[in-house]
Image (cartoon, rainbow, N blue to C red; front, side, top):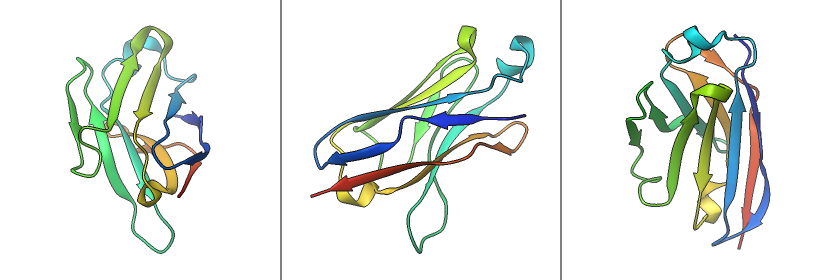
Length: 115
């Protein structure tokens, strides 16, 4: 499975970004069964879960993301999204999408939040 993340960039604290992750090589009937997730890794820190979304759209979030981040999926497009609002300097990291079902990782996308 090849996952393709995009949408990272630089933003000031308080700003917003939307990350996208595509799974072009998964056939639709397989993709819809996958639990998908977003992780992030800050410099010098371990990779951590940001949140995940099931096939039916049930989401869970890390405490750091609750109330600010929203994960959504569009099964028809085989895409997941991470909407990030009220970004903080500590959100600076490389963000990765991941299939919890097949344990596949996409290449990360850098998010940099400046004060």
